[in-house]
Image 1 (tube, rainbow, N blue to C red):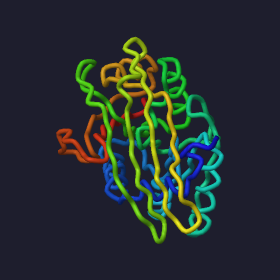
Image 2 (cartoon, one colour):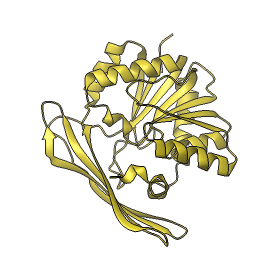
Image 3 (cartoon, one colour):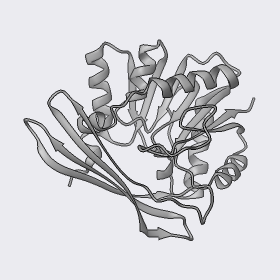
Length: 258
């Protein structure tokens, strides 16, 4: 059975809020922290390519990686329709090789949490390091609880419309599925789609990890390829982590060591 992520056209509508401030933040991180003039970006778990397309419009060389064939095909179709030079590869984010090095890598929209084990994360960081120029940045956007006893489980709803397509979305973190030993749980994405050609509710449920910041730092240190440059919230250098109705977004900035 197809899940919600097998319908990238509806994912693209559901997540169609303004990404320009997020891309502005990433560019500001590059200006502040990068040791290379980063004009190339690798988007890991790129989904429908929302960030890829925005950076392509800004003149960056961009390549995306995603595990879903439907997403990769959609990214390439959308880029071609907009006249953008975007490349996209299908690959597992645990281990990948884009075939070249980049000035900056990003992993947005909480996708890092699908790396369920320490081994998965270490393998991922090894691939990222091999794909980055020395002194380049890796910028991650994910949900990080402040402590093991401080989880605030998300259950958020929103609606987006593009033309004659309406998507009423809900994202749920199922607290009752939490495994305290592995710190994993089920999350679920639900789209109620209304359009002239498709009227249905589609869902996606997957295992994800509640990764604490200290755990992440320990794994990054074990990898040894990165130095930590900052922890921010909601793509804002001044934000203190105020709750955002669409997500509590933590932004982690790593720099590859020379």
